[in-house]
Image (tube, rainbow, N blue to C red; front, side, top):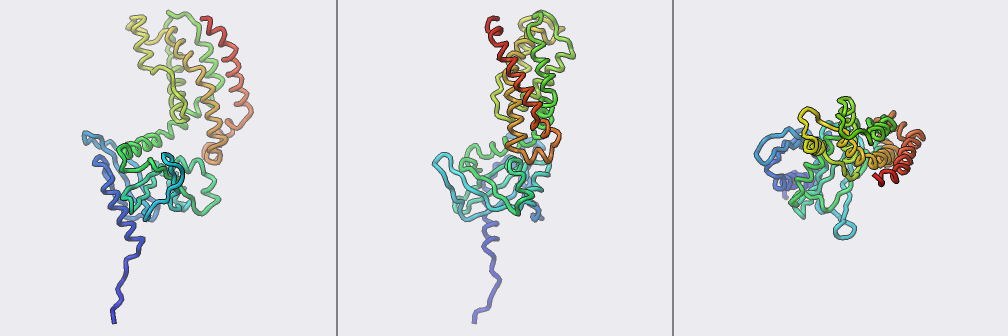
Length: 318
């Protein structure tokens, strides 16, 4: 009679194969550090170095899931799939981590890994953390680690997520100062072109510029304003003045570029905070949520849009 022996569970075999695939897919610039205790939702940390081998200190965290084969749906070129289920307690933990988190799903048959940055989905579906026991994440066919741009896209998503706190700061800045900022934009155009911009006005312009640029990046608004470096370079080229960093002419030109974008950024903020990520912002930033949900901000945006529209015929004559 044959003696019985322990059998290795299929789930363990799939997990081991997933790790082999990760080791072959990860680029040489990634330092993958496996976590020994993986019951809390993180299987590895990845430290990213540059092409010269400099360790940058940029970290991402990974949960690795393995499956025999991912089931794709949709049309070619835009195929999507659904990840294995994730406990909402794990998703809540991911949201609290101070580093970007990625879900890596290894397809054992394809010998490849598909990835998804999890925090954007958590922010969009924040209500599920309290209403459901599990949740899933969308996978896109084009986001695979073996592709030429796969690792680079992971790093891009990671850099974007690391800027999330800065985004919240700058978003709060333009929302809380919406009326004052537009008065600044409107009031600092049409001045004496050859005058030096006062230092306090220059600093306020830089603050406004940096906040609007960051918000535009996160909201996907095309940023058509010349860079600060270009503005300062052109100012020096025109005026040949080593003692003045910015003249009214250059400030006027920059504000004319910025003005039509400003209400678009405010409307994008309202859409994000009061609609598409409503539950997240209501829980995490209740004051900002209340401001974006108020009729007062809508009135301010409409007022800005009306002033811009009213001044357009005059600007065309200049």
